[in-house]
Amino acid sequence: MQPDEVNLTVDFMGLRLPNPLALTEGPLTGSAARIRRAAERSIGILVTKGIRPEPAISPNPFIAKTGRRSLMNADWSDIGYVQWLEDLDELRNRDFVLVASIAKNYVTPEVAADMAEEVAKRGPDAVAMVDYDPADLIRAVRLARPRVKRPLMVKLCPFMPRLEETLKQLVEAGIDGVAAMDSIGPVLAVDVETGLPSMGSEDGTGYLGGEAIKPVTVKYVYDISRFVDLPVLGVGGVRTAEDVVEMTMVGATAVGMVARPLLEGLQVFDRVEQQLREHLAAREVADINSLRGLTHRSVAETEMQFDGRAVIDEAKCTNCGLCVRVCFQQAPLETEDTTRIRPHLCVGCGLCVSVCPQTAIALRFT
Image (cartoon, rainbow, N blue to C red; front, side, top):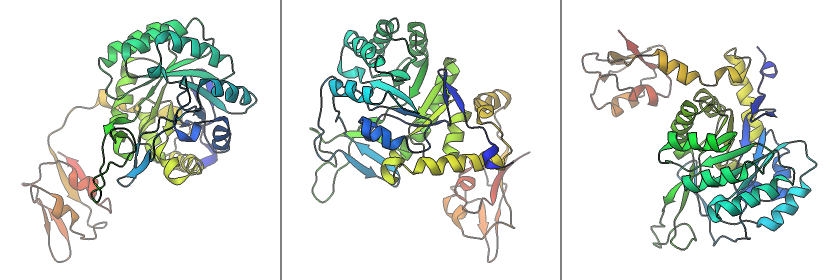
């Protein structure tokens, strides 16, 4: 199969996306001009930065790289509601899918519903709401639903309490889709030379996004798609085509990136789309939609196992010694020209499998 034969189109809340890639709330979608620049790339759906009632400026600095591929941010900046209405009017004539996001956490449910109604009149394909208070979010959706004649989505904060109950109430209130998740925080990083926090916010704290939070997002999307039958936009830590596949397998319909394009530029969307085509074509997957929910189905058919033991493929092994160093059981034995596993010591934890640079180790089950 050739990469261009792979179908990447998906249906998200009744909206046909050319691919599942999303650019969600953040600095790169903070105005009409920035959105149009992003839309030149291979992005299936764009979500505006959270629209606040008043313009805001973030204290400097407010975005910084942390670790290898993650970001900390204290970015509250926004052009404000009045300017956003003008910018959305400017974006009416477009050839891409756009979601307008209301920063519900800055206003009451009543005001959020008013904002959503007016924003919807400016022609976005859908409207989203973001809030950390489940009760307020549910009330805002209930108030907005009769007045917003477009798909209505909510973006959930990390670690939402009573997730299943909250989701079911949001469905009853009338949502059409779910995005998960927002950055994790508050978090703090300090310069060891000066003692100053890395963020310019009042207390120096910010919120963590990027690669470090991906496992949390994967579990979140997995749970959401277990609890409700709605399209899910998974965002948080996604960097690669393989990450997109992973999110799809746990239930996501669309998959967002924010940190990587901020760190490397918007052209990463073009590369990830091509790599996604190549990844699926190499595995004879003609349609990405066929992978959605695969993890749920696989887990239902799989029993827990306790008899796994590591084995080494000597043809692949370069005798680097990494498995020897990481094994707390000291099961791998390194000799002059080979490494082998002593089965009576191996407990099948899998750490050596995950760190082997040559993929020379696998778990074998008896």
